[in-house]
Image (cartoon, rainbow over all chains, first blue to last red; front, top):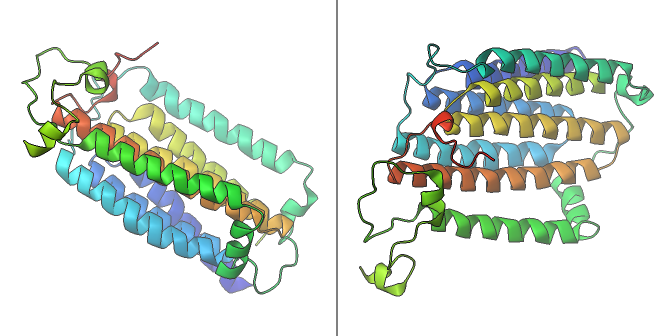
Amino acid sequence: MFFEQLLFLVAGALAIGGALGVVLLRNPFYSVLALVTHLFALAILFLLLTAAFLAAAQVVVYAGAVMVLYVFVVAYVGGSDDELRPATAGPLVVIGPIFAGALLIELIVAIVGSSLSALDSRGAEVGAGFGSPGAIGEALLTKFLLPFEAASFLLLIAAVGAVVLARKRRGLREPADAISVADVVRHQPPAAGTQKEAIG
Amino acid sequence: MDVSWFVVLSAFIFCIGAAGVMTRRSPLVILLCLELMLNAGNLALIAFARMVGNVEGQIFALIVMVVAACEVVIGLGVIVAMYRRKLPIDVDDMAELRG
């Protein structure tokens, strides 16, 4: 019992510290590393909530695969250290944290004031297999087969979309000085996306 | 540990992420803060799944993870495309699509 509370305190402090690091660190590369810390701490919290499979998926998929993608893109684009320009910053820099604080107070009032009596307990009694890969897999392939298939289809669409978005477009003329987001989406050079372009 | 502790922690993480989305200017960091908010939602979902003693909330969290991965892939693809076209990597300068 004491060990569980200690683990919660350590993991919760790491999770909040990592989250603050993501927001406050100026170099995007350090923000990514702070998010990795945060994700590991969340995996520990998932284990405390007897969600073993999700904890493993969190470490493997999130902290492993997704964060590697982030690190590559930050290394490619190159994070700029001076992106927090206080002199030209808009009013959102002041209003944003105030709004977030108000949201936090509102959420905590809602949680504390909710009539869910089970919220102040350790939760329902669950067997040893709760949250194990077997239980998750059985639910995923019987009751939740349709969301499972939809998720796989969504992943396929995202993969194709990423290839289309990040592909190197050859034969592109030099961009003009004034250029907009709409150009990135709309503008297609004559040979882009064709067999001719692939051959070069 | 009571379930309410986990839910309060998830509220904290969600609000930190929301503050980051509103104040940061780099789209890379905004995506990271979106990840924070999605993970806070996941933590609340899993805490409530434990409260009810039902595995369905964990399935929901798993699907949220899939959607978050898709969102990251598309968002990073857009950022790479912006970089290739030598656009400024700054959301304040990207106001063309504002309605």
